[in-house]
Length: 615
Image 1: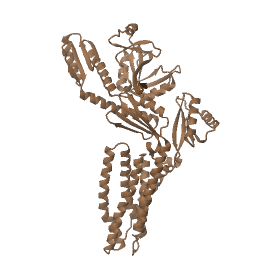
Image 2: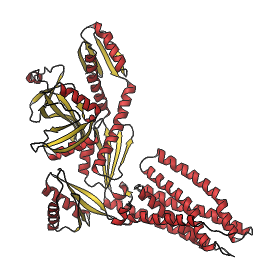
Image 3: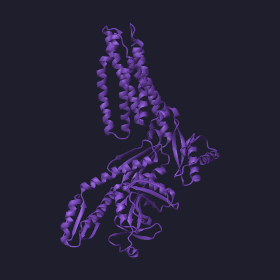
Image 4: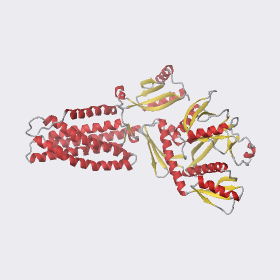
């Protein structure tokens, strides 16, 4: 019985081998510590400016490996991180606030590989270095914000239904509604039954009052939403930072883990992740006296704020639009060359803004900037984190005409503040304040040490498997080793094509696959040896060995594959990384151990008379 593959099957295996080599090659090239310079203005960096930047770097005597200028951006490559940091500090001082100077790790993959989409796989925090943050979501603030929204919505609904009331205010965990007369209570209850069924209703002895409270179930949903919304927002902000394959996941009920591989500018990352900034647009109350409000007599429908210069100002309690209705924001300058933020609203926000400006032309409108700041103070010898909500009016302007979806906000102190605000608004507002409770930094040197140890483990494990297979199965063992190398090649190529993140557990998954993938060849070879002992010819033994062992190999791999899928489905972080490499390794080992090994044996033993197998 002859053993041979049709031509198409041989060509398919060779094609997989070639593709595997091409997409694995980028991982042999490293990254260069680099500094990227780009303009924050609409005008990009010119060739003349790029030449000046290059001259400034060379004048410092730093070892500049390469200098690239493309599409208005400058990328300076260095041989080490010390020169990179020195160059970045020098350029920040020299370029000013109109340019962004960012630390980067630029790949050294050749252009011909990048042209076919071949890129190196990403390295995780434990291999590449970076920063690990543990953020805590302020659940109480989320609940209070929900109560404030209910208060504002309730006032609007009562006015729309023409229900007479004296006040709607929060008090000791309750929203207390005081009516003008007891006979208005049925109309109030009708509004509550229609639009506010999630609120629990309590009727005190006073006939003209109704007390409302957010139900426990609703409060739990609000807190869950706050964590989920914050994770989405943080992910958007991280994308703005340009971090490849970050890890953002929930830990417990109110904490979020953020891992940023490759990030070196941790101060910038903390500013972006930990800042809770948003805007509110309100009309200015011009009907009441501001000084009386300062003296403690604030009108019912107004709130007292302060401008940046310290002057008090009265604003309407009703919010026109908020930060969560902003879909896009970009920094720029206004007609007077002052820093500004160009804002685009979603459909709901645009409708509210249009409705307000239609009836308010000629009236002043204020922009309130809201930010939560966290300070660490020493109290009685212990560190105490103090959180403060800062609200300030950054701009007051007269509404000159009707506008809705797109408009401009001015009154910012600097272009840097405009850029940061536009980034935060573009990424979305946090549903609740977050506090950085833990920060850990993994240096690039420690990451390289992990890579070296992982590679040493792989090489030793691979060498032991190769040695065992050659000693025990002789020439056929060599065939299995070639298939094993083919398997590792496919794993690396697939991880690179998927742009997956490789971590230490991922390396462990590859090493485990190396040990497991030869199991299929062991089963096949033992079946071949059994057939030879039963008196079958070598050709028949090869055929039967591969055909009859297939079912056993499939069963054993499917059970392991199911466990790996469960690890990926229910695991988090590093467990997922282990599961991904294990799944890919199992699938590729099925291909290489059965098809790859058989192709080699067909080339050596097929289509000719064989009297003895080296097995």
